[in-house]
Length: 305
Image (cartoon, rainbow, N blue to C red; front, side):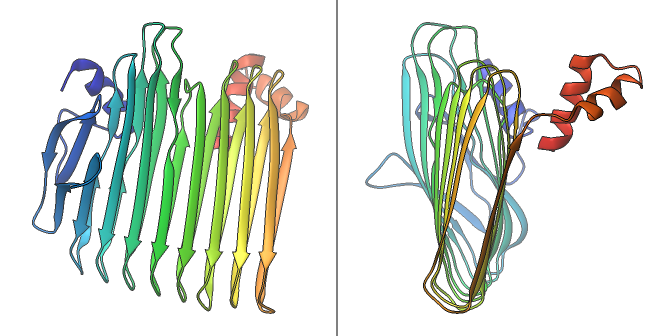
């Protein structure tokens, strides 16, 4: 792999010269390294660009890394990754994407991920996105995530957009079986003229299934963000959707949470709050010796933690 890939990997997946266990490193639409383990097998897809990850039933305490890097402009990367997680497995999947351009050409990554969790399987999915480079070419990342949870399966998503991404459209859909649980923690920061849109669509089909979705975002400069979420309660279930956003400078946030209940015992709730940093918070930190800019940065870091 090239030096830029190594730099991006250190930011999106805590890479330190090597990965332990199973991994697949994607670089500029190609494979820069791959390794399977005894319990996690990674193979090429036969019909589309991308990979299949098969995790054996009962696998515990293992991690699999699947980062993707675009290291220069004039790359339009499209990948399809499918994850098959066996019954009673409990694993961590570390994804993430970095796009870099020092030219006038666009650097783009489109990742389409599908997760199939069998009964009682558990997955922690960690995903970081970042754009770097001084070129005027746009740095774009458009992830699509489709989730299918069997009975008693649990998936936790921890997604972060660190900055530098000019345009991003993040689409996530999920179908939940009986007692299945989906937990989402999303954090996004935009600046300048950047645009970010997230779109969640969760269907709670099984009895006593649940979803807890919390998105926190900061819109700085003249950036624009959209947050859409639709929770569909089709059985006895519980669903919670929350969007908290901070505006800085001339940033704009449009939040549109929606609920659809088609069962008498579907308990659904949504919350949305958009505002600026409270003046008393700034004053308190300035009294401790911080400048106004340092105080603002400290508050934002705590909000997005």
